[in-house]
Amino acid sequence: MAQPAARPVRLVNYLAYGANDVLGAGSMAVISAWVLIFYTRFCGLSAGQAALIFAVARILDAFVSPTIGHISDHFDRHALGRRFGRRRFFVLAAIPLLPTFALMWLPGQTFWYYLVSYVLFELTYALEIIPYETLAAEMASDFATKARLAGVRILFAQGSAILAGFLPLWLINWLGRDSPHTFLIMGVIFAALFMATAGFLYAFSWERQRPVPPKPAAGSPLLHLWRNLSSTLRIRAFRLHLGMYLGGYISQDIFNAAFTFFVIFALAGSTQAASALLGTMYIVQLFAVMLAIRMALRSSPSRAYRMAAVCFALGVAALIGLWWAGLPATSGWIWIGMGLVGLGRGALNYIPWATYNYMADVDEIVTGRRREGSFAGVMTFIRKATQAAAVALVGLLMDAGGFAPKADVQSHGAVLTLVLVMGIGTWAMLGFGMAVSRRFRLSRATHGVLMGEIEHLRSGGREPTSAQARDVVQDLTGWDYESLWGNNPVGGKL
Image 1 (cartoon, rainbow, N blue to C red):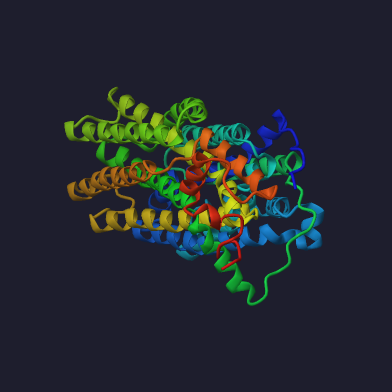
Image 2: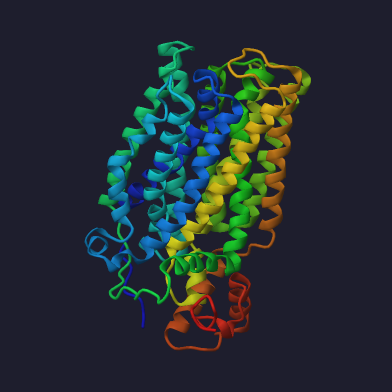
């Protein structure tokens, strides 16, 4: 049976969908750039304690996120899901909880306060962001519309990252460099933005029609949940997508966690200088996203990914070269490094989210079902678990290298450790993502073939429409054509 006609995605829908990534990316930009500085320089925690808070919260959230994704896939069995939307209900429920972000930045508290407040925000973040990540696939089915939705999302993400970079600088200039209230005011401003954009998203988004919700599977609900989630990893395109996503994003996590310390202690800069550099980098990223949107639509996303990774790697090399040459953060040469870093990071931010929007389509031809929530949950689970490990490792290595909290000057060993972590860690993850990208062949052309085969199977077809279609679908799914459309363990048949 053919799918009902798609509802047109208008400008206000693009804007509402994109604006919500002020929460998705904006909060992560603030946290990754500033939380270690806030905890160590204004709260007196060691780098190891700060990294432990980050790691515990992310690991707990990593288990909660896939559960929320699974629940949202089936929430229209319940009256609340039918009334408010199986995805959008969670967006609405999270709005009054988003001020927990501001509570994270209250100065003068204990280790346990910062641990609990961070965990509360991470759980609220998961409650809202996991269902949100399904909405592009819910609202559109064609390659171009999904690519534009991803593009608008990342443009808003880069705008919020620019604010995350410059806002501390403006507040420091207003309140003074030693005021701990800088970050609290920043947290309040961002929390208000999060609530406004989540409300905008709820008002101008929708979900695809699903008249008859599936019946619950027999047996243990918990066992069914984890079988369903783990089965997403049996989709070849999704496994490769995860590799590219982790390579591009964890390289940025490592860079973000180390960069502010690098500017202050390796390049003899200041918090204000780091803020200005980050803000400028995010402006460059904004323009890089615009270029990446065009490249991904007209060319291969995997090729654009590799070009971006090389650009980012060269930028990091240029920054480390400044330290090696003994030049300070005020040197004009630093803008070359920051420009290259920004160009690379902008594309690396966009491309994985653009390709993610097609994963449920690849899964549908395997299972005959739509599981956007499960993919969002698993993606966040793996992302946050690895992100927690990466940032915690940065903090622990800084501790091992002799980093001293609240100190204005660090030892040569501490600075060398910081430089090596930022360089080697970033380059290693970029190399991993590039290697994976060479095997990823989802593009506008192959997606078109995939969608044609889905309609062919939905209409009762059993043989591929052509030998080329067979090859494309088998490469994307990792399954033989005869095993598609539910004729496999993932789809429920042995």
